[in-house]
Amino acid sequence: MNVLLVDDEPLELEQMEYLIKNMFPLWKFFKAADACQAITINQNHKINIAFLDINLPGRSGLEFGEELRALNKDVDIIMVTAYQSFDYAQQSIRIGVLDYLTKPIIESELYKVLSKYSETDTSNQYSSLIHQTLLYIHDHFAEKLSLSDVAREVHTNHTYLSRKFHEEVGVSFSEYLIDYRIQAAKRYLTNNPNWNISDVAENSGFNSQHYFSTLFRKIEGITPKEYREKGK
Image 1 (cartoon, rainbow, N blue to C red):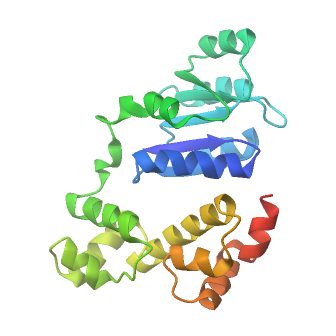
Image 2 (image 1 turned 120 degrees about the vertical axis):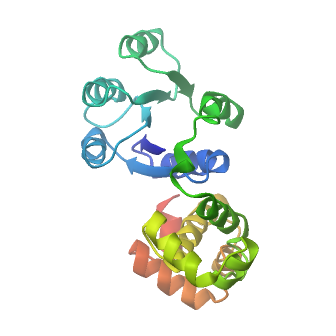
């Protein structure tokens, strides 16, 4: 399932992705800060679900939602807003919006909206082996984890798993694990201001603060400390 998240607040995007991933860890997420970025994403990927913040810079979420519906008639659109409005609700109905969420997002309300996808989850694009592998990574990423460890847990040969993983996921096991750990670290930096960088590194699965900081800067373009300060 390809999910588009559109909001001009980076922390809102991170939080929404985090909450949805708890329920559907294998979904793919694409994030945009405005309608322009979102249109480009829609052109390059088949979007199944779109969460659109109503108050976007430039075109509003409702205006973009109408455009998105014209380009992709099968997309499920869910509007997100900081306050309720009868006019917004009317316009949402007119463009065929599936549901309406109010900020701050309440987990139970979000999961109620997403519950309909539990039986139709298209993450079965992965084989059973890779599905099990990804779930194991998501549950144990903070631990010392090697391809051989995971292969043993999913009862297969590590060479075969390596090949199948790359074929189906599109990146190597190590690349996926690093990216997943970096994404976790970003959440920890934002949501745990009392943790020092060493704590973040350890809880994200990195056994060296120096290695973590170097890798984080290489991937994100800024240091973990700068990322935390940017999010304040």
